Image (cartoon, rainbow, N blue to C red):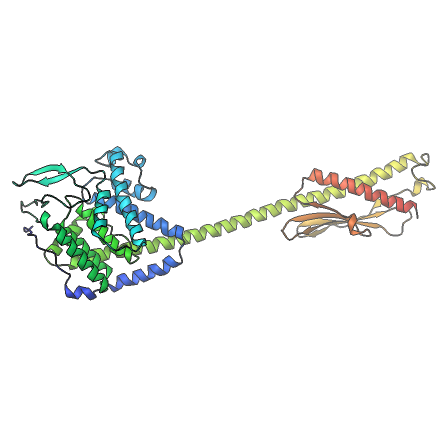
Length: 455
């Protein structure tokens, strides 16, 4: 790797002012359409997992910690918690690792809020992000004047006080901005950023610009890579895209793209960022469709279940209604038989019961009939004829389905007024329904006999 000498940051090449990736724009447009018809709950679910992935991977790629792929996936899916991190899955203690991950998660959440408020990027906000990133990181590696590496206290939220030029594998030095030049270079970077926004530079170009120029400056003693990815994420978020997520296994391609940009070839870094954003948009579109389909199928399943439950309830009502109506029919036959047998047994000796009738004429019959099955419920027309009557009284046992879809059972003598009708719910206990019917029928049957006697 050739030695890299620091030089002041430059503007993007002229041709990049008008560069725009058409495929990325198409995916963005499709995402906007899908997002508009996707519930907030589904959108939050997708975005939450992306934010967790960003928070975990941005430290992994810097070598702050190691974490197995399996546990990474678990934390992305279920949330960052020490309880989910086995000791053998990381080089740090689960509690220490969780502190770092939650700091990084706070940064991405803060970026979301910052964008939502429509605030412009400032040096103050960049320093604030650094403070949060390094909240639980107290030391870093520094280089002495004679080139020795030593651990030094990490200044949080302020520009570096010492050079932080890394010694590369081939013993060459990669020079970053000298500490005394940092304030001026950072001011120039922000000025160019505002110029690009005013001239409509595409988000992928601006994200790559901010990321690379910030890395050239390397303004903090440590944590610069995390801040650079946060700045790129800020640009994408401002245009409705997703954060810039670089996975640990993509480290080699990522660093090669940065080295090419150091050499003056910006294309590879730009292409890398575009591909990362396309992948996230495609993943979000696919997940939104899958979740929407899943929710649709769940809704259909719930509707089927509700319908099935309704059918089961209706079936139970019908069964209970049939049982009640059949029980009522048996009760009629029982009461009429009991009356007939009582009169027959008493004969004429009990003049107080019924006067001037002959025992052989004392007959009450329940006419034979064929039950009618209407809507799966059997209804009955019962014919009751008293002695010497030419016509029978018709007792109708029937049902009506009300507006709420519930069955109501009725008992009524056809010749009687509606106020003499008995009504009970088909959901009532059969024993209660029978007691109510007995009371009602005995009263109505007694009235029939009284009317017959008075003829």
